[in-house]
Length: 98
Image (cartoon, rainbow, N blue to C red; front, side):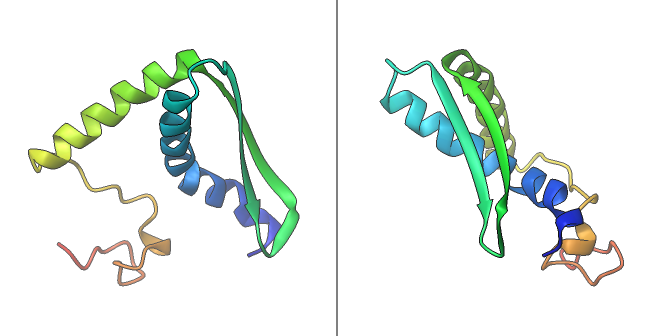
């Protein structure tokens, strides 16, 4: 991974970080400020950092519930912006699941 890929990789893992935040902030309701960090093993000096607060938990909770409901209803759109980097793509923005 090179330095140019860091923003894209950070964006790729953002929802996963927010999900961890959602769980931890629910366990530690007395803590208001959370610092989420993504450290890349091949470039540990290049970090991704986002700061969230307890109030952000509610916003992400709404997003999470919408996403889970859509998955249960099998009603979701296919994200094509990352197809070139996806394991389920033929490398030409063509999902093998189509």
